[in-house]
Length: 154
Image (tube, rainbow, N blue to C red; front, side):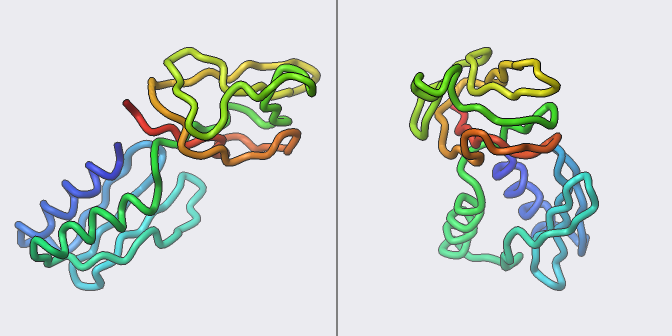
């Protein structure tokens, strides 16, 4: 989803007299600067991380290269942890995981359990899609707003 927005930001910058654009969406802040040709991401915790270096002026060949670079940064939308706790991928140690890479999910489907203060909290999908990445291992401790899964929307 944010890849499309990022393309729009680059397009606006290319076709204007503006040298810099900064936009916030999906808990991320993106800054595109024409002079230095970089895209920056700033999460809400103020840690700035360079996401991708992209030439702002582009030809048709370069545009497809930009699309590939943006796509390689992420494949899907991140599902963030709503609380700190312990991540469990299955209801019991003997059961298979709720989801694996490639699993089709629907909005409201249980993806994992987070144990917080001896309470088991089922974490549900916020969108319909396909799990493209599981970012946490079973029984790992997790923090608030830590990415758990990447889900490619349908």
